[in-house]
Image (cartoon, rainbow, N blue to C red; front, side):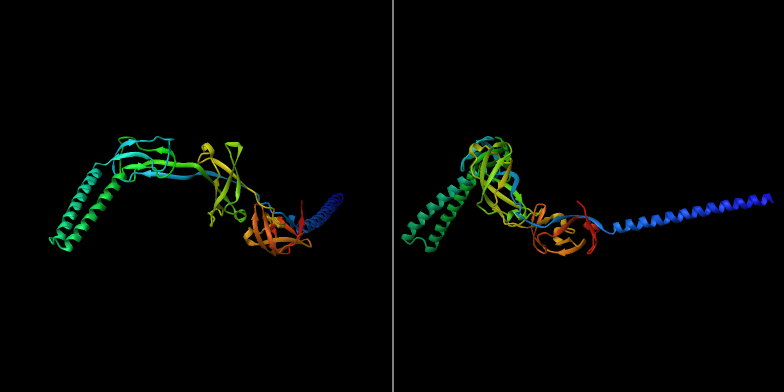
Length: 355
C-alpha cells in the first residue's frame, strides 16, 4: 500500500511541475507577442532625413584651374631633301618672322635654277628674233605667238626653280623662341623631317573648363583675375577670348582666357594657373540638395513629407549648382524634402524624421 502511495505522490508532483512549466511558457509567449507587436508598430515607419525648401542666392562664384598655352606654336619641317649646311640659331634664341634659321645644300636645285635661267635667256632671244623677222614678213603671226608663249613658260619655270631653291633656306614664319633644335650641320633631311619648334610666349592663354551653370554667366571679353601657383605674390589680368559652343565628354565647356601681358616672359607655357571669375549678385531662387532626387537629378522626382507620410512629387528642375539644384516648379518654400532613406520609400509610406 505504501508503495502505491509513493507512486501516486510522484505522479502528482510531476504533474504539478509540468503544469507550472506550461503556465510560465504561455505567459512568456504572450509577453513576446506583445513586444513583437510593439516593434512591428514602430518599424511600420521609415526613418528619414529631410531638408527645408527655401529661397537662397545661388552660389556660382567660380575658380577654375588650367594650364597656360603659348599664343603661337609651330613645328618646322624640311620641304626639300638635302644636307644641312648651316644651322644659324640655337635653343633659347629669340627670332623674328623671316629670319634665316638654317640652310640646306641642294645641288640638284642649283642645277635646275641654272637650266631655267639659260632656257629663259634663250626664249627671250628667240622672241626678239621673231619680232624682227615678223616686221619684214619673215615669220607668221602664229610663229610669233608661239615664241611669246615659250618665253612665258620659261619665265614660269625660272620662278618655280627660284622658289624651290629658296625653300632650301629655312626661315621663321612667326616671332618667338627656339624651343627645340632638331638638326645639326651635316644632317641629311628629307621632306617632312622635323627641324625646329618655335613658341611665342609674349602672349599666353589660360585654358580652363567650367560646367553648364557657370558657362551661362560668362561672356567673351569679360575681365578675369588670374593667379599663377609659382608666383603667389603676383596678380595678373586676362580676358575671355573663347567659350566652346559644345561641352566635352565630361559635360564641361572649354574656356580660353588671353593673358593681358607677360613682361619678361615670366610665365612659361605649361605652367599651372587659376582663373577667378567675378559674377554679379544673383536673384534668390528655390534650392534643394542634390541628394533629395530619386535616382538622379534627371528623374525630376523627390519625396516630400506631408502628414507624416512620404509623398512622391514630380517637379521641374533648373540649374545644377554644385550640390544644390534650382527648382522651377513643383515645390514651395517650406516643403520638407527627404534627402536620405528614399530607397526604402514608396508613395504613402509613413516616415519618422531623424536629425
